[in-house]
Length: 125
Image 1 (cartoon, rainbow, N blue to C red):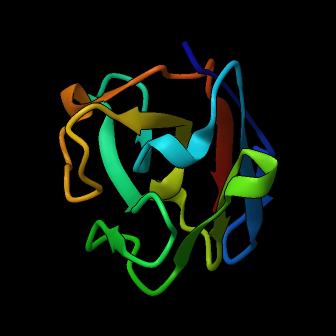
Image 2: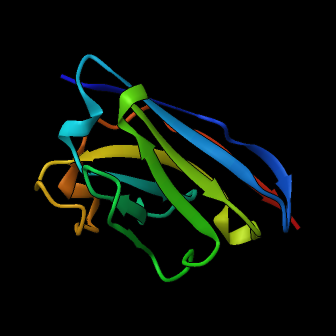
Image 3: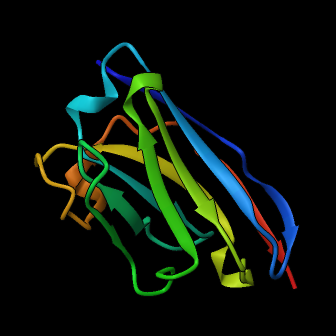
């Protein structure tokens, strides 16, 4: 069973950037399409971005498209999310997960598993 650990969150000002990382252990990340989700206080976990097993195909939520970039390095069991032009509404806990459907074209949190503990992103206005 793969275990995921997210890191890289922090407190940044509006317009700033962050690079989030998700490291896998206990299994090969290349086995899975991967996704990033986020959860703001009092809200449901929402889809942010996903990537195919080989990294060639990606999909983004409309709210982050053009600002976020998902990438992976299977040789290092690493998934990343580069976040640019941060907005206050990007605040939340960011999680990475493995797709259980076999597809990166999955946008519901129930289609993902092996969540890490999350990393907090706070954007000040």
